[in-house]
Structure formats: structure tokens, C-alpha cells
Image (cartoon, rainbow, N blue to C red; front, side, top):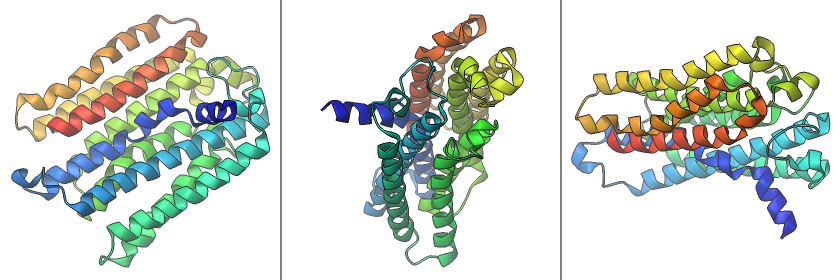
Length: 307
């Protein structure tokens, strides 16, 4: 039972709602675009399969990323003196060999889920779609692992923000949308950017909290490169621009005032931004991570229901 507790801690369950936010938005938008309004609730069996297939695949990828991150930072010694939630490899709760094997296992599970989902979604369609999405699935696995693992880990060079924006935002929303519709619509770009930026906000907050530890271990995140004051301004943009872009989306796709209900998800974020503005001790930011992650998930749910 103790071992299970450690593995659940390594999986970082609190990150899972954030990881599926893009799938929820992309799936919802495909429903409103691909069917008439009176058919929206008559969800086909195939749509259910694609939705849950994409959902489970994304969750596996997220756990894979968390395991790989724990392993990569653990073997490099980056997490030895870190603040906040303990990491399993660095604390000795799980050995580096066990974590490496778990990472490989989840990579294989993620690959199998991706193959199953892609062949099901594109059965009878252009074979090029199959190869394209299989390539994206493999790219997701590589990106999850290479964030902290290896000598050229991109998380140590300040490129983590770019990859999170692409995979959690653009690929998650647009990719899931394409699985249903087999086409793309410019309308979905604004919600995709919004989800991507809010996801990057979580990463930026994590990097703000760990700035001193990362400096010591030569983990050159954007926060380390640009400084804490810059990171605060960057964070403000990452949180507020999605609100603006979502309002622009509603303006061009207006049906009723209820479409603005997603604004509720930003209320706790306003208080969050106030804390960030006056914070002088990065170590106190750990509790804010959950707020941003859950607010992003709430935004995804409300936006999906009312748009």
C-alpha cells in the first residue's frame, strides 16, 4: 500500500484535469460544427469511442510525462533540494530503475492507445491521416520523455513553454477536433491558443516556484533566463489573454449571453494574479498551481457546455 501511495504521488494526479482540458474543448467544438443543433445530444457510438479514446490516451501521456520528469530530474539531482511536493526518485521512495521501467511501460501503453484510436477514427479515410496522427502520437511520447531526460533535455534550455503550448493547446484542441470532423476550422484556433496559454501559465508558475533550485542545478527555464520580475509580467499575459481571446471567439460566434459563463472560471484567477503581483517568496507559490490547473479545467468545461 505504501508503494502504491508513492506511485500515485509520482503520477501527480492533480495535473490530469489540466491535461484533458484541450480534449474536452476540441471534442465539444467538433460536435457543434459537425452536426445540427437538434442532433448534438444524439452522440454517435463512434463519437463516444473517439472521445474516451482521446481522453485515456492523453491521461497516459500525462502520467508518462510526470514519470519521465521525476526520473530525469531525479538522476540529474535537480530535485534534491527542491521545495514543494516531493519527487519520488530524488527522495528515494522509488528507485531510478523502477521509474525508468514505468516510463517505458507507459510509453508503450500510450503508443498502443494512439494506434488504436487513430485507426478507429480514420477507418475508411485517407491513409495519410493515419500516418500523420501516428507521427503526432510518437512526437508526443518523445516530447514527454525529452522534457527532462537526456543530455539535451529541452526543459533545461527554456523551450518547455513552447512544447507545452503546442501539445497541450494547439495539438490537443485541434487534433481532437480533427479526429471527429476530418477537417479544421479557423474558429477553433482561439480556444486552442487559450488552453495552450493557460497550460503554459501552470508551467511558468512551477518554474517561478523552483527558480532558485533551477539556477543551482543549471536548469535554464525561461524564468531563470529572464528573471522573476519578468516572469510575473509574462504570467499576467498568459492568464489574461485567454480571457480576451475567448471573448473574441464568442463575439464572432454569438448565440446568447450564456456563452460568457466561462468568465466564472477566471474569477479565482484574478485573486491568483493579485497574489503573484505581491509575492516576494517563490517558495509560497506551490498552492497556486492547483488553482490555475483547476480553473483551466473549469474554463474548458464551461466553454464547452455553453459554446
